[in-house]
Amino acid sequence: MTQLDESHDLLHAKNKDRYYTQNKYINTLYSIADKLEQRIAKLERVLESHAKCIGEMREKKDDW
Image (cartoon, rainbow, N blue to C red; front, side, top):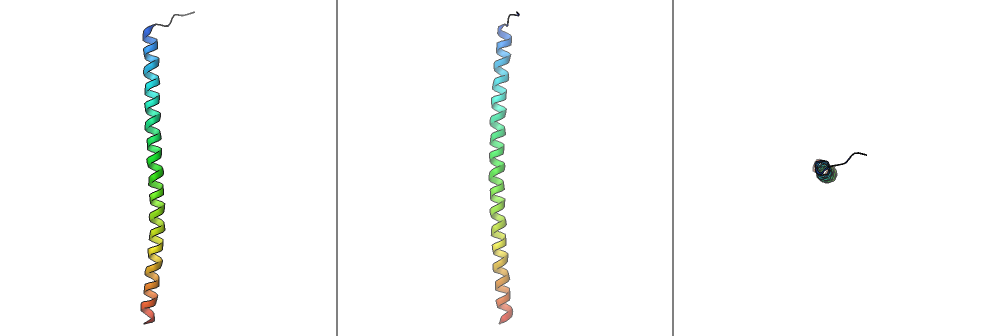
């Protein structure tokens, strides 16, 4: 059986820290992407609503 020395333990600890940090960044990016998708969806709904209101206003103007 091979003996594992301190350098191996240190390398393992660094890799574990790097993995944790990368996962933290990835989760943050997913969170940001999710919030952006929600905002885009909300803006699309608002634009549709505004377009509908503008269309109704134009119809009323034409009726005068």
